[in-house]
Amino acid sequence: PDGTHVPALVVGTGYGGAVAALRLAQAGVDVHMVEMGMAWDTPGPDGKIFCTTTQPDHRSTWLRTRTKQPLSNFLGFPIDRDIPRYTGILDAEDFAGITVYQGRGVGGGSLVNGGIAVTPKRENFATVLPSVNPDEMYATYYPRANATLGSGLIDPAWFETTACYQYGRVGRKHAQRSNFPFVFVPDVYDWDYMEAEAAGTVPRSALAGELLYGNNHGKKSLPKTYLAQARATGRVAVSALHRVTSVAPAGSGGYAVVIEQLATDGAVTATKTVTADRVFFAAGSVGTSKLLVRLKATGVLPALNDEVGQGWGDNGNVMCGRANHLWDPTGSLQSTVPCCGIDNWSAGGAFAEVAPLPTGIETWASFYLSITRNPNRARFTWNAATGKVDLNWQTAWKQPSITMAKTIFDKINAKEGTIYRTDLFGVYKIWGDHLTYHPLGGVVLNRATDNYGRLPGYPGLYVIDGALIPGNTTVNPFVTITALAERNIDHIIATDL
Ligand code: FAD
Image (tube, rainbow, N blue to C red):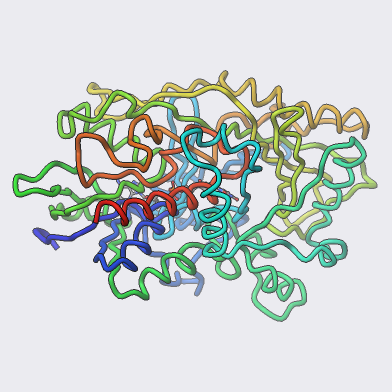
């Protein structure tokens, strides 16, 4: 309620926010989490909380009147559809040169993501977080993050036989015939549940096209892990459909936090101010960067340094599909949860997930999301004329990613005598180079903040999400975001409380 005082306020309920809330609560601090998306705890008219990727309805998309699917076309035909404007689960946030996909709701990106839980190779860690001691990350914080997230590997014997990973086996065969290292990747999806789905003994989720717009079963998203543990302490409250718009030093000490309450059509129905002794920014790379850039530029937090807004990267994301021969079907039943990849990072700067195309029909396509060593970094700036924060990323900055991804797929195509698909992102367009799933940076550790996420000049203000990571994690990012948050909150609890 308006006028309340809280010891700790957390902006956002994704990985960084969930770690902060759990560990602060365990240390005896009362925490209030503020989340602009919905709670996603109530079934819709069809009895389900989430809709599927094949039948997206109003629940699919954050405040748009038409879906904006990452794969916009199939066989050249546009597949987006009109929907009522609603505070749906997947946000396709447009900047001038890139669309950034993000989860909206209690659980943040964990609600919409693939659940792929990869720890970077230790030899690459110095490029991921140069100011962080790798010994404590690999001995303590990565294991803690993986254990609490519940990540695990597919049963290799089941992988060999199940119809729903035919596409994975085809991906492996093509990788290995071209001499690329093939790897299994851990995931937070409950693998036993998925085997039961395939056996027909439980309701289907990963095998029913659920993922991008939420999983009704099987995925151990944050509301089932960190946030469940946080609530069980009795010290954590969560306000969904509430958006933080300002954090300003309060005369009385602490910070005045301005919060808008939203209706499901996006309208603001109330504005509240609460005071907090400490505020943890965990609105995601884009959300935290946008807030802090605006608060600095508009004189609310003028002492923030000039690194705020800088060092943003897309984790080198680029997508593509390959057309296989008729004797290489990838299967009409595809699990939405990826379980394997092609690791050409050291030789070619690309790590490619073998991804599903869960259309329900045979496509003879192999589909991949590559993470590449793209060196380009963008900057967020305040645009006073529009009253918005801009990002100066340009579409052409994806070219290094395409070049690196081609080190894998040109070779596979040459070996197999196959070609790229040109019908998935438009008409005659090979590369999905207009988007990222992995925004990182904008308020980089040890540059915009100190080496633990404290914002200099403002005691009690912290950044604890993907905004801290300087643009690339060499693999999928959420395990690193979680482990870094574990490291930082450990230090903050020991030193500042
Ligand atoms: P987020 O998880 O983005 O959480 C931020 C939260 O803050 C959101 O809930 C948001 O609604 C809320 N918020 C923002 N602004 C405000 C505000 N002003 N007031 C209140 N609340 C606010 N990563 C992997 O490692 N493996 C994968 O398989 C994978 N697959 C992905 C698939 C998709 C489709 C997408 C979109 C992402 C995927 N990712 C994956 C990326 C991963 O989900 C993100 O890196 C991760 O969620 C970022 O964590 P975070 O804590 O920084 O922020």
